[in-house]
Length: 129
Image (cartoon, rainbow, N blue to C red; front, side):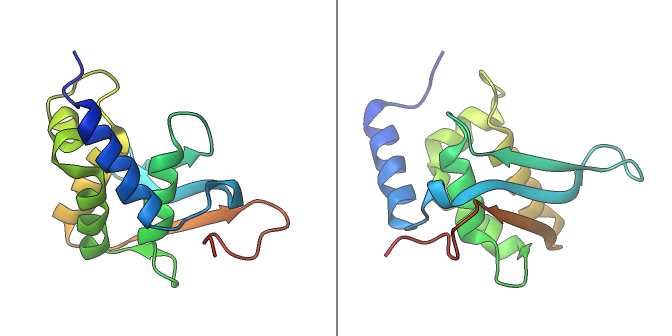
């Protein structure tokens, strides 16, 4: 069962659009050594694919120029996702929104994580004009 109303979906899409991140400019976002057991961590990768582009844009927007997502920037990303999607993620419905769960973890850890935003060839910026 989908908890997110059409109105909430549209509001979410407007918040993502306001980030002014061009998804065509991004190949993937890679959160380094983030998921898995301690000592066996793997990268969490958000590909530029259908159903992933909003997360791709949010993660790219909240990654600092130094290449990290801080706890504060993770909280900003969670605001963009909104309460309805966060509630759905916390209840584990459907795919359970791993991008939201991972931002929740970063915010709780109080420690930044290293992130690589890989651009598509020919792009110098991920932002729209």
